[in-house]
Length: 195
Image (cartoon, helix red, strand yellow):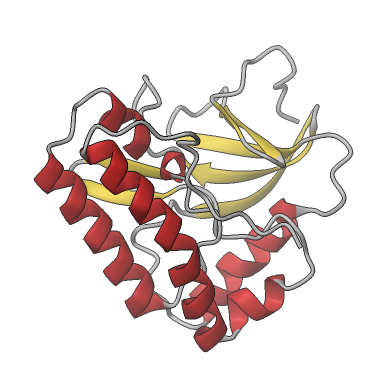
């Protein structure tokens, strides 16, 4: 049993909180928030298993190790990607720590990787992308928050590619606005599945 109740999450999303593993700083644990209608952790684990079975290149996803019991419920363990400041692609852009050229190259590489692998990236919020050692990692957003069409998006390559490209369009527009210094209303640039 891992005790997390007295620890502060290092990240919080729509359906889950993420905690640094208290006994292993190279790992993190994603915990479902209370009263969620579906188990995103279970679907993410299932999707990781599917990607591995199909020999998909997961080199830009943190490794997933399975479930662990915590005092907040079942948690899904991942490699912790990032730094102690928990800087994301978005925060690096906002702080001016990425040049226009570097940011554009990273986003283009991200698009190409997703196109080649057909990995479903639904929540394309730039906070879901971490830059570490000049490489990008998608740390969240590959599982739709609702179950309705998850299996279609994740396991039918043509639909996955279409959904990911659709999700990337608003992210690209907001990235361009950030790079041009234009004000944007909602920097959380995901096209989150709500239906």
